[in-house]
Image 1 (cartoon, protein in one colour):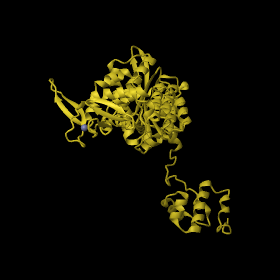
Image 2: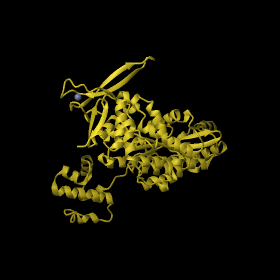
Image 3: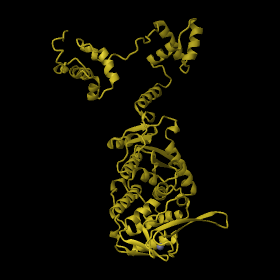
Length: 497
Ligand SMILES: [Zn+2]
């Protein structure tokens, strides 16, 4: 064959029928390169590594286009079938007589019986060739499984990236109590540690699919990769749901719990801090209701060691400046009661929530906070916060101090007086509360009926933030109030601007 006459202007030449698609692609590289004479530009243009380009440049012979074809990757020296006919027959006879003997044992038997050595590799080849298994079907199943597993993407192939939603790890807990089996599916965002869980009657892939759909709804589709183990519940319907959402599925290695440490840890917490405390019931509806309340606490309130004692939601907030979700006061009374007793989070905070937004009624200076520690009779140390005048405008201002708790009580009352539209956060509130509603609904309702709801009480939500919100939230709230807040002799008033 002679292609010399077409060679130079080779674009039209890319239609040569006997050249593979890949080879034609490579031909295009060299066409481009021949015109621009610039390797970097060519590589950039086609998005290929320089290494690849140089490798093919070395191979490429312009008058022999086959040189652009992929060479066989088969090893140059492969073992060939070296078993003689007599050996083959002897091995078959031996294996049939001792179907449970492995190749090593048969090797010894062979030597004894025929007085000559044979390699165990040859025995293996004969067994495979003639399907001489005790359980032929079982072996075939096993082989099919191995082939299938090789096609699965292993979690070790995924390069971790530190952003929310990048990797969601799923797992399940099987509960067997009082002769009743129940299955709890759990999921955790590996980066932010936001966690979800839900109980199902059985370990069925249609339930795992339901769980996935709920999470997709809850995270507003912000899921990039999913990790599961090789369990049967993560096949079939679950796989279909994954394909629907175009989510890549990564698998943990079998019997390697360290591949999914975060969800394992969450499962342990769930068992220790929820199930072990008497919250278990085989009634899925009741269990899931309680579980949701616990999850709200876990995600919103519980400080996480791995997040530097931040809560997943605050962590999320700090690092992304995205609107967090909060429980509103009317919805989680029970949770809140417990939280009032929990001072761990508050005592860690060095910032003060209400300074800079309140002014002294006597002299017009700002209001600042002071920390006081008091040792109680039982030996514990209690921290008090007092707010008072900075005296920047009048050094001798006699306006008194007020305890933070009292100030909050007064602020809550102020919330009743102000026009709620005055709070510039209205839109923001609505968004937050609707996300919370979503959070709840996704755990209670049927997946098909899931719809965001806007049933929001802004006033009670603002009060909730004042009492239970983080310092950032409180400041944000006060900064949004357009009227001036004035503190005179322990009494807080508002002054319209
Ligand atoms: Zn003052």
